[in-house]
Length: 454
Image (cartoon, rainbow, N blue to C red; front, side, top):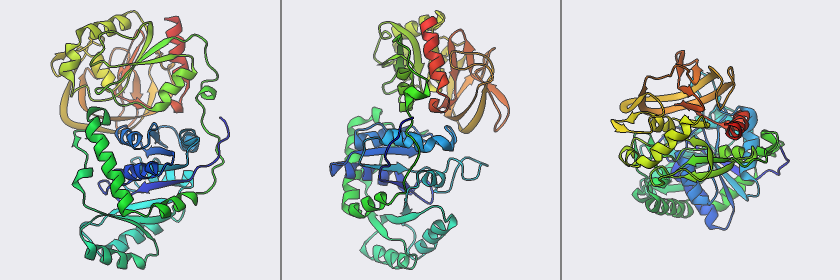
């Protein structure tokens, strides 16, 4: 790790989900970028979709800060890595300010990340159904944890000038400044479906318009000078910035081609994964399973992350040449790492449509949501991990795979119930579990080494 100066920063939080955090955080990023600032975008938690909107607002990769997946000790270093060279950083929170991993106290909460970053918090309050009560709400959040510094409030969904006056009068007694007031604005809404917002890659033109509208709304309704000054009041960070090359203990000169799935169907990935693969010596080449009929030239390993293959099952199935190429690569013993959407793509079929047929399993959409953090241990050796390797992950899907595990499972999970999950066969490691490789950079090094020797 290398030393890095601290960057001005603030955390955008809320009392609960649905208060407008994403609108305010993304709009603030866009508004600050519109002032000519280099803005570093971050998201608390495992969510992949919001960072896509952040990237659109700032022109930089949106990065996640997850104290459960990566451990609290990596939050500061990963933040500084992402924010290197930036003028200011905006961190969007997750759920309510004090909500974290179930049964784990403050772990993985926005409050914990704010404390780890020594960053002031801006509380976004949905004021649509209250007036004087807003003071009690804000007072409770300000005083709940004295180590969390709430530096201001942005009032969202304010109905009228009269409503604003009532809210401001009530908040005078709390002593927390109002840094912005936003009216209801349908043009900044972003469409949702079964797993949250629709990713940027699926609606790019509309997403560009929505982000621009968010930026304009925040510029018009918020005190950007006061918000910038608040960001500059963040405490110093002494952590060294995370560095991929140091994490994998030096590069290999091999340059093995690792193909990484992208496009509309496979939008979920953490930026650090590609950085770790490159640091380990891989030549990372993206491809789109919806459009490309062959894998990149010289492919020796394949990474298929998360996304929404169920939405594109017909198109993925219709691309038979690529499905055959993926199956042939897997049959050759080359390393293949597949998470969630990648697992579905490797199955024999998805919702009745033929997929790659690498795994003797079928996948289908259901109404049941599987969601939560998981503690996992590698059941056996694979291209990603040696038997006994412990990692933390996250599940988020409405699909089921039958059977849920192969003869050689990928992971043994401890909670909420003990079970085995996923598939390991030849070089394939396929699972529903999303993991963050920065927490265990050895998996990237091991994967690239297997690419060289397979």
